[in-house]
Length: 204
Ligand code: ADP
Ligand code: 5GP
Figure (cartoon, rainbow, N blue to C red):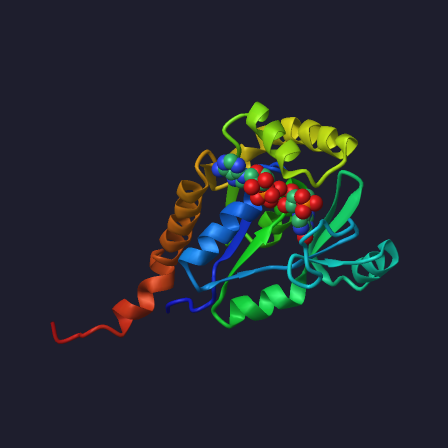
């Protein structure tokens, strides 16, 4: 039997590596991926929209969802809580959408343990010096958050080996093309394609 369920893609990488940029580039290239909107207790950055980039919640509202077991995974990252609402992910996968989670390494480990079929991708910048330039260039975080994110990036680098794929975001278009290619390859796995063989022309 072929599997019509979509592919669950977990993308991690240091803050400032270019995940949002590369995801946007990949989404422009293909129309079969849904971005999983996370809940967070961090304040919205200028230009971010509630319900599109994140669901911006109070700590109380976040904790209530944790208590109700509403998250596929959740974790703390540089002083704020982040979590993936489980139900929309399940519904989209069942409807045949590929679903992309942009989540940090602790949450990614929870998803990999629960869902061994998930495809994991670690996005890294070409260097830590370039990461620092991008975090400062983005101009959205106060100094202590930038230092926290850089320290965290150094600690997270060795975890890249736990991921199925590593994409280096030197050129954003090339990185988006690589992420696109990874999704295409996963959809070409034989277990997802066997239905075509079974339904194929048996008279040949
Ligand atoms: P993340 O989502 O991983 O935190 P962003 O997508 O917000 O990262 O990117 C961080 C900053 O780096 C942004 O200002 C973005 O425009 C810039 N950026 C992303 N990719 C590249 C790249 N390949 N080359 C140069 N700058 C980039
Ligand atoms: P930012 O505050 O820069 O948007 O995100 C900080 C970090 O939180 C990033 O590494 C991002 O991947 C991660 N993140 C975003 N949403 C979630 C989530 O739902 N769960 C987990 N575990 N991490 C998340």
